[in-house]
Image (tube, rainbow, N blue to C red; front, side, top):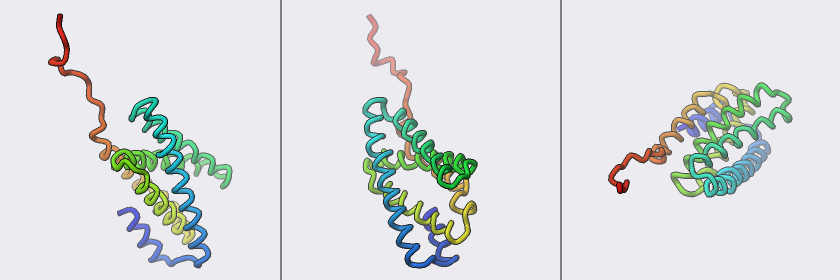
Amino acid sequence: MFLFIHILLVLFTGLPPAQVLMFVLINTLMIGICEELLFRGILFYGASSSFGIWRAIWITTIIFGAVHVLSGFVSGDFNASIIQVFYAFMFGFYMVALRIRLDTIIPGIIIHWLWDYLIDLTYFNGYSGIWGESSFFYIAFFAYGLWLLRDYIPKRYNDRSQKKYF
């Protein structure tokens, strides 16, 4: 639904020149592939085998969010990069939940790429902060990630029938 809203917004406001479309397409595709392979592929796999699923979820999500503070060095706007850290954290939580539920990173790569691509196109058309960085979308991503992981909520050991009494 979120991608569909972005597609409509981009089509409604007009497409940028073909060169911009291709540059942004290739750039965001590479970002989607690299970030998903790194965070939900290599890092999540290593962390989950060492620390378990929930710790791996939080480790990769926090690191994914924290890395986005580096955009402040590019833009010079560290206040905006702090907001981006918060949004990336919520998006990263959704992406790792998707990775766990589907047991593959391919859909995550595609969604990450399309999300970044459409956000960059909305920025090109002057809609930054309205759709692309709307807290609603990221809160919804985080909430949906929680819903996807509803079966992974650890249960306390309360089954007395398993205990042996001597």
